[in-house]
Image (cartoon, rainbow, N blue to C red; front, side, top):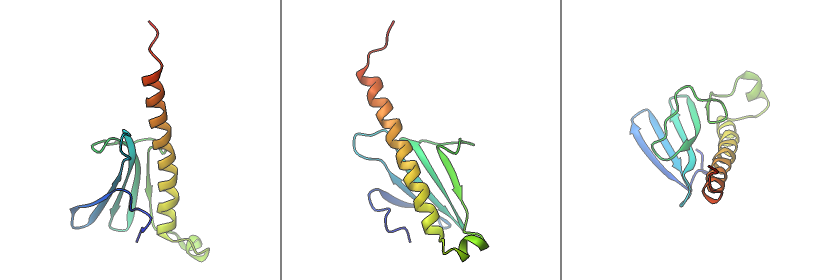
Length: 109
């Protein structure tokens, strides 16, 4: 499952969960995908230790298995997760670009 997630590292913090972390070299922001039982949490994170508590959907989304109508349409849990991963990768790219811009532009006093 999730063969497209191969640019980062996988870990198994517990028997019932798996965590994928992807942060490009030189970047501060990246993505984290946490697979737990029958759902997944996809996050744009500020560093490997970044934690969100009740974060906005822009940064963190919980993905549940497809419902009846989604299954009829042929949508899989993997497709739902990968769609959200692509959104969070864009968020991470935007945040990294903002940080680079802040470093280039000196603060006005």
